[in-house]
Image (cartoon, rainbow over all chains, first blue to last red; front, top):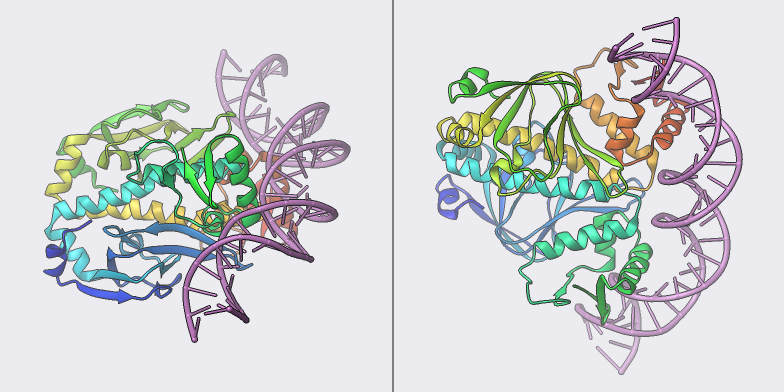
Length: 199
Length: 199
DNA sequence: GTAGTCTTATGATTGAGGTCATAAGTCGGC
DNA sequence: GCCGACTTATGACCTCAATCATAAGACTAC
């Protein structure tokens, strides 16, 4: 996350989107650095059959969509507001100027890209596996690890619908439903009022 | 890629590894920035059943293993020499000092992390798909798109064995062998002396 | 040149996830 | 309070990648 006073001095501006709005689309070339002040944004793709794949869900304080700013490529996915969101956006040229003038900001961006690569590296071997329950566990472990919930067993509720879980893991809704039931039998998680709680 | 004269001034040093040597292992904490002068390096994991997953293959001019230098995490995968390799290595503290003093180098590192994230973003939706031939096509398209081959149809040879393709896509060797044969029938690629050529 | 390993190849079998159909529970908007 | 859309759920069937077995071609080291 880059301090807002630095961003504003370059100058960045505020943008508002309503739930469901598209912030940018796959294939577009990037014009802005985006950082979330409020709300949630998902990055997703649709394959030929119309099946959704969610790359990532970003929350307040996180930036998204930087990679194409550095290389000469269009966005590989869409960005869609999951709630009403408030963004701070800085134009591409100003963004690069900022990195030249503020080495510590450039390192902070490196840090945030490094963090994302690190988790992709952790997830990729499991996601590529054929075993559906392993995919589910990997996602759940990631979710839990990135929450602040440390209140003891079965207090962390997965804030995702079965469909979203399916889209994040590349599985089908039915497979997710059957999978979480199996994982409950194994004692890996708990289902209360259809919500999933992790140990 | 960072210019060698800058690296040497900090000061970096040269390292040599023989084919098959391990450069670092999963779980180690990082001490160096590595850049390849000569040869190839793969980053890989093994799952519980011993199945290999190749995160990436790096060639001359590329750097690897930077993410853990920025965040306080151990390497999420191993780095293994695929051939005899000559590396240039710069200690962690000197590396960070260099980024502060040379903003353009910091941006270059951002660029290389961005390139890798982009690759992961392109691959993830297809890798998660159940359709094996789609996984293969995605890998091949990426390979082709990032080579310098623009000499017309079927001149780009995929520089990977069937096993490496399997480990990069999370499939089994047999599935890859059958898949590329199907893709040849479709006219998507050509097999000559067991080598795969892309249109 | 020869042994040993890696790579490519092919057939038979099987099991797990996808697909399709159907339905009940839940939630939001009017 | 009702309607419609979404979410969760369950059964039956099917498809296709994994698995296991076997073998031939290619390459590497000695």
